[in-house]
Length: 135
Image (cartoon, rainbow, N blue to C red; front, top):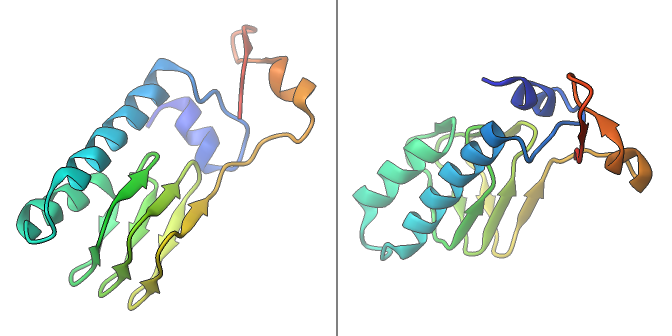
């Protein structure tokens, strides 16, 4: 886990555009897109993607799709959960969904935390003193 990811998971402001964070997002975005290209009856292929995408994906759980997941590795999903179409999970921070949950269509789960004062976001200094746009 890299430093910016550690900050994000602690609810601190972090530099989302650092190369290591972009790499994590790109991986999740590619897996989400691959999932969305599969047909509903390609259950084994879909299950394989979900197991790779999420930190935990419980037995008996499923997603209709399309799905849009920001990092994936910050999300844990319990057993016997069902997610209807158009699910969005922006898991900058941790997301935990317990067992036996049903999530309806068009649900968005969002965890980012950032300053509400634009000037604070636009002129923050990174650990090395470099000005960064941070969320």
